Length: 131
Image 1: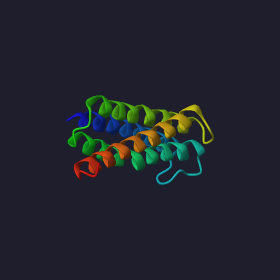
Image 2: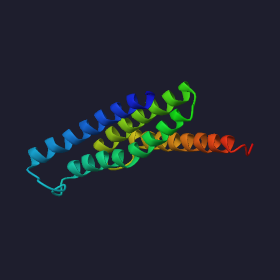
Image 3: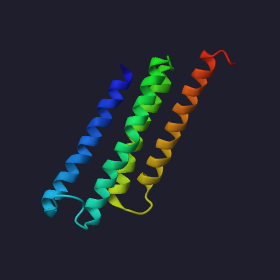
């Protein structure tokens, strides 16, 4: 149930990123690809990057929720994911180079991935009575 909230928020973010691509393509009259436009290329990558990370992290969040992870941990990971992906999208949309949003969005995404991985492995080990 809790994961559904963060799935919905991430879906809205991806929709917003998709609508931005559509608007840029219409304005630039580009039917497919980026037409050589750097801004459209960054918009496409911002959306694609979210699509690369969000599904895996939401699956991991759902498994952690179903395994009985603490509510505070689930909210920290879910809210952190949404914030990280917004930061990354804003940072990448503004610059192809290093930016505050891109750096911190990526770092936060990776830390959430690491935290969920550790939590899921720990729960598995506990369930197997290996500890």
